[in-house]
Image 1 (cartoon, protein in one colour):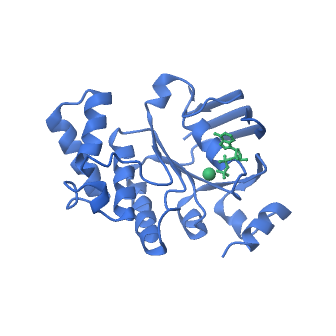
Image 2: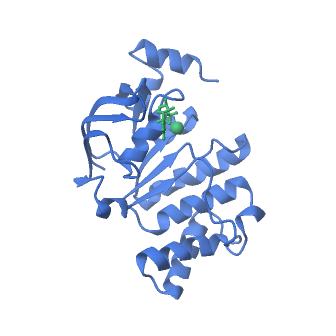
Length: 234
Ligand code: ADP
Ligand code: MG
């Protein structure tokens, strides 16, 4: 994936992103780390087109992220699954495919099952979200994000609501998705996952890029901020 960010600033009542610039080519998986409040989610929402930046330009794979066409071409997975509670896992996916992609019923069903199977949920497709584990529901959200065949999948702390066992289960499933060839941008506090899944790491600090580079920067930080952050890791 190609990322080109120029002079990106973003404010709510206060400024939370400060004149970011970033130019990356060809990484398939980018991990964003940093303390709470450092701007990771804001950055991810802007890169995915969910939110428009106050100023600056963000282009991903040569598309302006504020364009409608780009927004339709990405998937987003939130901290906790946001599946429709009254619909089965399968219907949660077929609904999107039928309503927003104009897919026929049968094709949508095949597509939904294909992605649920990919996330090891082939035997859960007819269950409601409340009748599966938190990890299974989160995997279904990932299947749903994938089902539209997005060019990039964004994940914002996809396991923060899960216990360690379910976290492991979800992150293992995400790692297997490498084989899909999709591009991923994710925020995670699970450093073992960042180390093994990210090809490139961005460390956010106070609304700025504090440091960035291959995952080896985690073991060899060059800034006091990243060193401090890593020392506090459990
Ligand atoms: P992180 O994901 O690293 O915890 P966020 O991007 O969520 O950081 O938040 C960065 C800053 O922006 C924080 O100070 C947060 O309180 C503020 N913020 C985030 N979203 C909003 C919002 N919708 N309205 C107002 N302030 C926000
Ligand atoms: Mg966040």
